[in-house]
Length: 119
Image (cartoon, rainbow, N blue to C red; front, side, top):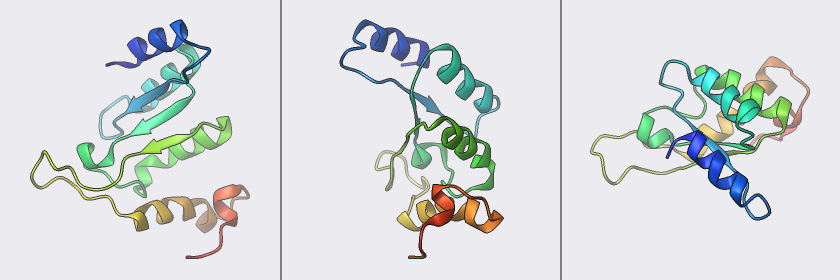
């Protein structure tokens, strides 16, 4: 289901649902898709599936996503674990989420991700 279909369904049930846009940051144009999904379609969260697309949440390519979500206070939903349907798919470990959250701390930025104590 594409983001426009999600937005239309959510709009028809706005009293009960919150729509999330789904992104694959390994695909060209993902940043534009994120902006359109949020700013034009009104979706209020971001869903990522790292094990299907083969990326890690602490990959530097995601920094624009984390900044965008933080500045707009958007929740980000990430599926963890292995892909039981595809052999050789990337496994996403909890440690990668911790490293992703520490990205801002390493830059000395002042926001919630930068203030977490070490694990």
